[in-house]
Amino acid sequence: MEKPVCPLCGSKSPCAIYNNVRHSNGASIVKCPDCSLVFQHPLMCETAERDFYERQFPEYMKQRGAAGETEPAKHYHINQGEAARRLKYVEKYLKPEHEVLELGSSTGYFIGHIKQLVRSVTGVEPGEQYREYANGAGIKTHPAIGDIKGNKYDVIFSFYVFEHLRNPVAFLKDLGQYLKPEGTIIFEVPNVDDALVSFYAIPELFDFYWQVAHYFYYSAKTLENAFRNGGYEKSEIIHSQRYDISNHLHWLKEKKPGGMGKYADIFDEAANSAYKECLIRKGISDTVTIVAKLK
Image 1 (cartoon, rainbow, N blue to C red):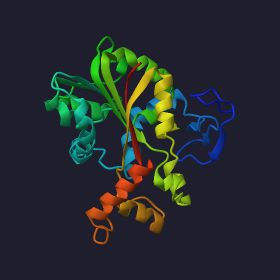
Image 2: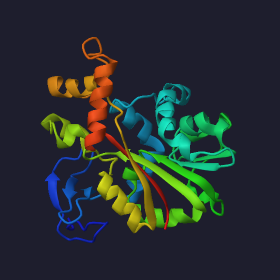
Image 3: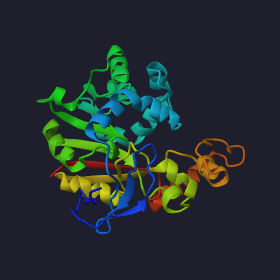
């Protein structure tokens, strides 16, 4: 196996921090000592990757306990709460005259949620089943970004997709051609500084957390570095916490995923909100978002 080279800073010194990537064929998680980027090595081959996202991904996510269903209509409706969560912090970047693109748009539940706020919404979704559902619901969705070549957008969204990309900096450089001169990119990713990983460091968590679908594990720092290398400048970094205090207590107590809302009779919404705000203030929330513009 070839030694890993950091795709952000070029360092040839990344070293393994975990040797078991779930569902992979012997991959490890490595960390660059120079720029702190955490990534998987080696990656799936491109043929296996294509089949994974076109055919296997919805069921894979369901097995991991992700919110939603593989059945598209149920998936669309059950994720309206997630769409509303996102809208709270991105609405200020939307205007009625905007043309909006979402990469990895799934069943279209987010852009469907915001389409009344902007001029137009377009999705890119490689998964055939979800894409067909979105198109059937009147949400224009394409299988690949190359299908919209020549179009430009005011805002480009991507939620929990960037960590799946095998060449993130090259992708960002190419993405600039789809952005209007004063346009905005808003990408949300898991935060590798998540309290479960960086503070509680629950051993049983790691076999679940390090997964074959995630090639890169970004912190606010390394996410900003990736965008800088891709030709963008940061406008804002936003921390948010998707999972509640019950989920964290469940991991600590039961050593397994699940538990959302399980202890709500003990820890009420005020306690839950205060806990989330603490994690956000310390930068150890489970989610981090970058808002960026072309340099």
